Amino acid sequence: MEHENRRTFLKTAGGAAALGFPALIHAQDAAKTIKVGLVGCGGRGTGAAKQALTADDYAQLTAVADVYPERIEASLDQLTNGKLAPKVKVDSKNQFVGLDAYQKLIDSGVDVVLLATPPGFRPAHLRAAIEAGKHVFCEKPIAVDAPGVRHVLETAKLAKEKNLALVSGFCWRYSNFVRATFEQLHSGAIGDLVAYYGTYYTSPVKPMPPASARPEGMSDVEWQIKNWYNFQWLCGDSLVEQAVHTADKIAWAMHDQPPVSCVAVGGRQIPAEGGNIYDHFEVNYVYPNNVRAFLGCRQIDNCWNENADYITGTKGVCTIGRGPLPRIVAGEKTWTFEGQKNDMYQYEHDVLFASIRQNKPINDGERMAYSTLLAMMGRMAAYTGQQVTWEQALNSQEKIFPDKLDWSGKLDVPPLPRPGVNKLI
Image 1: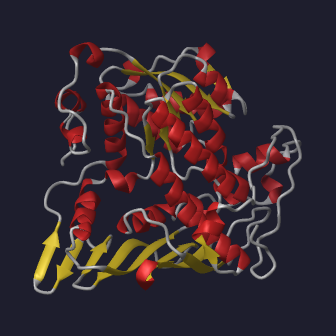
Image 2 (image 1 turned 90 degrees about the horizontal axis):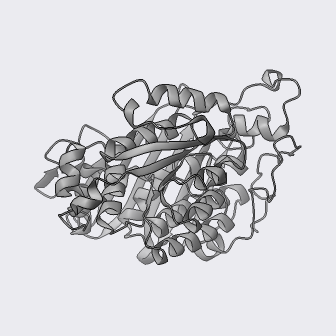
């Protein structure tokens, strides 16, 4: 479905109807202000705030939170420099700074919380928001370790009990052309699925600066958060933070049923002083009936880049990401998506706010947790060199995110994982 303007969308709920929402909105609800709070004011968070304010005529940004005041300032500068400026109502008293800023924002009276910090913080932030009765947009991934995944699964259940919306940042699930493609696959367009090969080959996202760039007196915790993408406890590694989008599409193709096991390889080709994440992985998942899924990812400059999906069935093949549109070929029959691609980042917020207005809150909680775990399972196999089962991944006791953080404190960085040495916990 082509993305409609927000006023028409809210009046007809045409886009939301495709996801099972009613087609009408009560007039008294449509004019009620929805107060939005943003936790994490970097580029992704600022983008999410723009999309939230665009999604609903009566949404207002009333609070922001970050560990860096300069990031708050930069975010608000962007948001107030354009047509959304009248919807930004953030007083200085509602600009919260620090590791506890998220809780202050939640307590400020917002209705919807946008979570866009590094993912290590996500389980605690999500639980606090849901316990306080807030609707949530939660960026992917949702945790960096299995204890965090289990925590989020409990929170997702709580959100359902409290009738709260929880929409995930797994954006491909909100792409109209990819949704149409998976509908074709699930209806048997290529027969029974045999194999899935997904690629996520890119350049480095946030390269680790040299230790000499660290300002004198800056604590370990602040330095690592400033360079969060390079540390396992903050990002979960490149597979879990970035290539998790490919893992999510694999899960989708498999009807969100878990694999039996996986093996994986990975490592660090380009040295990164101080960081401890891999820059490449290859994971081989085994599903029931010996169906295979392969995920390859790499973040190294001057290499072949590709984000694509090659899906093989008993009667044909499907390709997504190579060429302008998905293509299904089954014998003499060919299918391609017809229509205009929507803005999937905007649409996920359109759906979130429409579900709130309808009092039919959408909840992505379980699948976003399991898609994160699917990527995490591959990381566990690569780190240890072992075959890892789904049950082992789900029940892992390895806790990467620290129990307590002190902004001015010391925090040692574990060495780069070594297969055959690191143990599955």
